[in-house]
Amino acid sequence: MKNILIPTDFSENSWNAIAYGLQFLKNDTCNFYLLNVNRLGNLIDEEIRYTPTLDTIETVYVKPAKKELQRVLKRIKTTLPANNKHHFYTLTDHTFFIESIRNHVVEKKIDLIIMGTKGASGIKAHMIGSNTGAVITKVKCKTLVIPENAQYTSIQEIAFPTDFILAYNMQTLSPITAILDKTNATLRIPHITTKNEHLNTNQQTNKELLEDFFDQYQHSFHFLTNRNVEDAVQNFTEKSNTDLMVMVAKNLNYFQQILFHSKVEKISYHTDIPFLVLHE
Image (cartoon, rainbow, N blue to C red; front, side, top):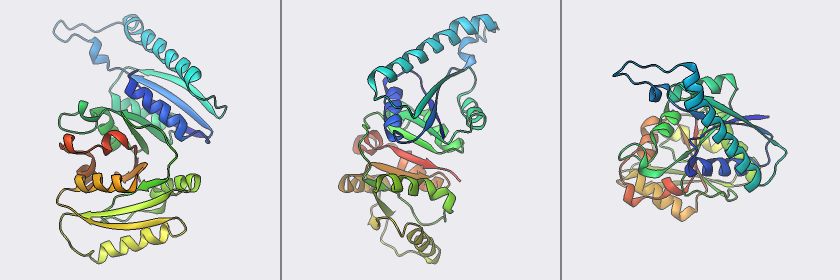
């Protein structure tokens, strides 16, 4: 049994994440926790030093949120394929978003967070929204990020960009092999540099470790040179028809080059391709 946390703000973008996630896990027995978080600060007027009562919080926030969550459950039931392996629970919270996510990850023993993201509408000049960006960098839980235009298709090509600088342990990489076992997909491992250079000894060792780890799966290494890492990723995902991108949050510098930047007009993989963020 897998425990899945799906934060929702009731937008179409978050609905797309729900729809994708249920299809992605259609063959798994899962508990899905649908969570809506609203900061209590939104109900507090600091200028007049007004703090709402529990009754006010219940009336203004909790009841409407619960009602909306029930509408989401009804939409799941009426528009998505029935699946007796899936069980749903609703959660409401009124605290800081990341604090709420962290608490539920521990309390519900969450295996995976699924979140939607809407291109450049979040952090200014960044491709992913502020809540999603905070979760994938600050919450130590596997997170599947579903962009606004992503539609579920069978996964046949997985991209795992790496600079080979850091070594990953088997436990960190095991979610990749789990997906490969289920889908029989091909794993592509692109290494992107800004100038043509050979791997150093440490990088070569880490490459060999990856090669050994994925030996029984269809996989290939790709060495690309481009002054802009994000442009190289865009070109690679287009040519390889990538269905899913995987990153390891441990490698934060490389991770940020691919996911956090301002070239909104030139890249589409952020709005089309789901990406899975792994944590150690």
